[in-house]
Image 1 (tube, rainbow, N blue to C red):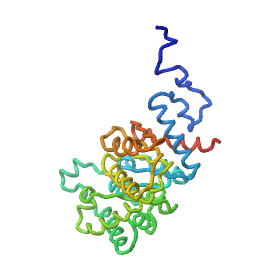
Image 2 (image 1 turned 90 degrees about the horizontal axis):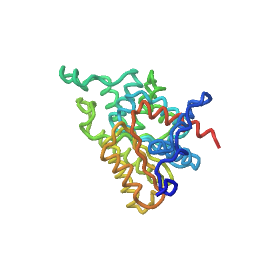
Image 3 (image 1 turned 135 degrees about the vertical axis):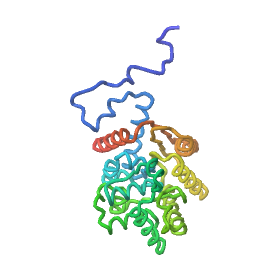
Image 4 (image 1 turned 30 degrees about the horizontal axis):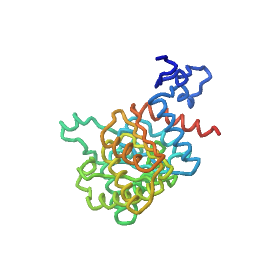
Length: 304
């Protein structure tokens, strides 16, 4: 059999073009080969750009490590450029973002603090967050909006580095999805299960309203292994139960390790229904992937 007649999976036409000294930072993805993850990365960028040009939803679901890796300013750049239309966080992401906004530091040494009996016992964090949640509970706000309002009212010294503060200022929906007992603020006596549960439930309903408009949009799960993939699946279930079609859509899971629930609940199950949907997995460190993704999106948006 001749190689010319054989079907080959890899072609030189898909190779990286090689480095050029004229390459600009936003063009880094041009170096990626059109193969495997290189192709998936470029497809994700195009999906996001296309969605925003068509005024469709682009929702980022964020785990705590995303904030801890220092990439919030890049996500804020995407918010300022009106690329991100909604943000969902788990409780850990909200806590880290709040601590960064108020005190410019976060993330304690768990092993050392646990041995000393002080893990999660920081008074300022719990007092600020639990108070904001209690105030929201007495009104009609969800947890995300309440934290944004509290940070704004407190004139958070590092508010420009805060996703919560940015979303509040730009009126971008930000929802916080809490599992009782998973966050350090729940260890404190001023934590109200009633207030936490009700305000997080309000945020879940808000999130469902965003997912109801996700058709032709994009959902990215970045760094949440369990909570947000489950929240996303339940939101889709409600949308479909109402008779609304959510496909076609693009979903992506970005993490250093591909876990079961994000792959199933974000990448595979939602895109296996209907036609035209795409599920993407990109494996890598947030502190490398998010800068690449942000630069590529913003550069691509400048082109016709």
